[in-house]
Image (tube, one colour):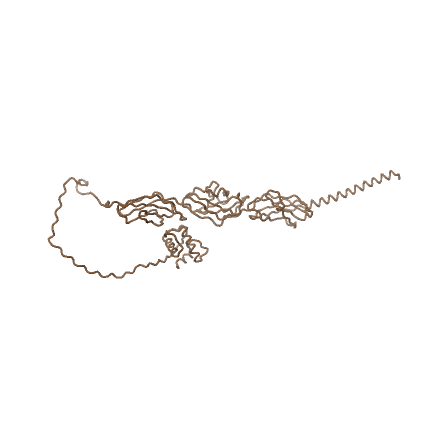
Length: 460
């Protein structure tokens, strides 16, 4: 074989060896690449993402076919950009769900999962759509102001952020109504409410209401996904104010004056300012003062209270004067002809009256009256308080003699301190009943007089 042929054969063998080495290297690289890809393959898009609490979201995904990585890397984010503080690792790759805890209430989050291997390589994230944590149930609302036709509600928003919306329900009437964004009330159902933002409720009076009517306000919160909480378990119950009594008048007779008015209050306190007396709280709209001298002028005023026993302003004083002395005597008149016409007093000169005859017999001295016998002893009525017998259910809004007897009994026991027994069951009376129930251990202290409370009262 010639030298040139040998060299040609060696060159061919060398090239073939180089080719084979390159082919093997390429195959190895492909195998390694395939392994890395399989180890870090991205999960399939999440099958579900749901908020299960005010600080908790559950994220579930599906592993890609052929995944052979050693862990899942899961991240939470409010802007689709995970940070190290938001990343958790799951080394059990058979687990394909993650519960994110410690999140902010009613806040938007994105969750994502990526595959990873021991080298630290990770795939891209399979990111969920936006999901909000649940809103927190609001606390008990409060009434910060009131008038005859409006009131202002302050919501206890709990841990909800300022962009949370709320449903405000008034169940004080026969049919619940819901606050609308314009401050009015609509009888929409709980599934077609108008959610109102916190800033649009607090400090804004609701309008178009009726004086001295009861309102029971409860609040629910709505998160950014439209999921509604339950209504606050405790509600604020109150009355709008009553109007100041109007159209006061005084009707007179010989020895009495009747003061009357109109109004929408639960009860009234009428005052005879001249005599310094008053009616006490009464449910009627008139007050009669008797035993006044004829031709005497008295001045009267009146105020009212609503169902929470909040007083109105006092009316401007009005006066009345009893009839003039002798004004009730009949003057003039007469009988006889003339078709029943009254006799002309100047038609004839009246005759001079006859001089009365002097009695012919001197009247005898009256006999000395016998000394009257001493009267038999009379027993004075007992000053002991009568025992009140309570037979009916008494609650806020009840009126009548049994309520007055209840107030007298509670006053006797030291629980009712209002100046008078009004006969109306309002907020002050309810507080006295609760104090009595606590003293007697009548849990849960409902504030109304039911069978157990009646039995306790009747036993004292």
